[in-house]
Length: 438
Image 1: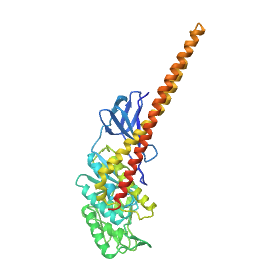
Image 2: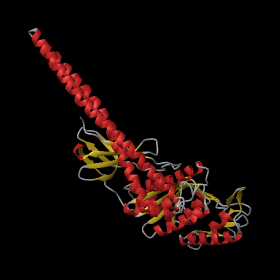
Image 3: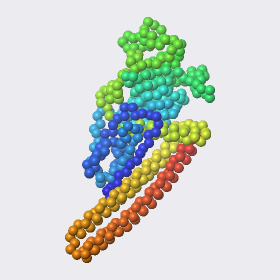
């Protein structure tokens, strides 16, 4: 029976699209000549696990190989400093949360990333969640340089982008329109003046700390301010609320900048892709050694979304899991997730072994038949023919006996795996449900 490999599907749920997703560069070549490309995510004395992207989707497959199968493992040479990419794709507070980005930053730190790129394509979202995210980003900046790469950044996403010292924008990117509102049972409503004042002060502090003119924030939030674009003595663009410069925002409008306008005003730099961002940030080529930071952020956001959906289906109000609650439960959640992955791998291996057994039985049956016909060709008497038939029947009976016993064991093992997987998933569900009470 041939050696068994194991497959595990890692669900990457949610609306996020892997913008500019880098191809994984590790290669595992087997003794039979087959080559698999992906990212080596685990390796020990007996096995190596490769995570591969499923073409045309946001699903990754993890495949474990026995070392005895492997001829060689090739890892690409990293050129330049390491960077990681994190998704800010979708609604802030739903697809993008402080907990999801914290998980991504944690993985980036473990990977030794010098730079972290926030890949932003968002219409904004929760003000409260934005403030928590800004705290996460500010804290992360002590370990790495955080860069914003903007496809579309509106409202809260625009403020998040401006909390980064360096902003890069795609040729068709847009940034702006940061008017705050709150959701009520009757729909959107203006935020209280007292709360708005404190909120704007905090946002101005983040933006000023990043080196951007707070007038950008005013222009994106206030209808009655007029902004002019001028050039200072050093020849750099600057904003003013009055003067002879070009009017980039008239009263009665909200500032929303196209890519060209964001570059013209000095808010952002143009970059067609991540490689171009690297040339400007790192001064040349840079490398993304792993996609785990992106996937960690996606996984945490997906878990939150799943909890919200399950709670809503029960007729309750979607809970908000605090970052603290998620962080406290992270070791147990990680252990539970690992147990599920291992059981899924065992289930896949079990299915593979059953298929192998069927193929092996077919091959043995053909071999027995072939040997029988070869023996008949050499038979000289009816006694010889009878003997050849007896040999064939005995071999066939022994083959069936062994195959049936092995199949029964494999099916029993498969049923045990299914029971254990069901129990572990139930524990995962209970654990997530318990967090909603915090």
